[in-house]
Image (cartoon, rainbow, N blue to C red; front, side, top):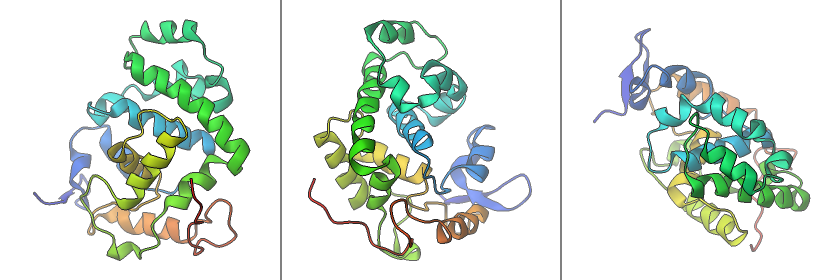
Length: 215
């Protein structure tokens, strides 16, 4: 199957964005563009966890409901959720009512709060897993990478839940930590340009390699 398809304007885009009407604006404006805001990163990671085993469209059309249910994914607020909140969320038909995934978001918020205190930000931690290989050399149409596997392992050691290697690769794609737009996709060049001027959180120059620490 081709990895690209002509969009409504005739320009080539990633094949998956033709799967539902909601995908096109998400693909063109969000997916793959670099993110360094901690709240947005936590939201993206949480939604990718909810997507596990489901279609992305299911999550995307419920995104505003998720934001309302989880206090806009503000880490400090979600970290204080109790079992009463779990019951409230399990009764919320506007989201995915999966106890394990709901409890994972709350657990991950607590872990994120600790990480921010230790690392300075979630962004500083997550962007340290960016590949040092030139963008053009990275494989496409894959579901995991060496970086997503390591990120998954490290997060699990720190107590995070629903952060398997495939979920983490999807998160890295969504947050722009990897540019996985098809080679001939019109948005790929835009993402490449955005990544080119993006300053890696915690460093003055984007060209600095990821820090090497034992976790």
